[in-house]
Image (spheres, rainbow, N blue to C red):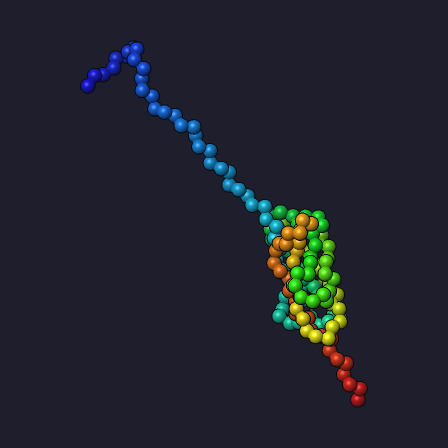
Length: 140
């Protein structure tokens, strides 16, 4: 084998340099979300028609709910206001929703969802069983 002397004019083989691969930054997901943490329907009991219904929602997402967010009826008979404006809530904040239940003769069940101004539903579906008003007791 021949050794190359210092000052040899022949080009030296050099390793090829590859551009450094850039690793993508971890993506932080912007997530709209909500969860029911309390209210009158936290238990499995039905709400009596004519009373009020309460849900306590928490923003458990990573971004604030946008201005113009609404709570909308997505299933069941119209027994309460079908569209309720909800205040914008930052992550971790809670919102208290109270609705008046209309009188009715038959039991029913309703389902509500938070919806963005662009009509995208998000978060946990709020649901409630509604019982008809109790009949007045007969006079003695």
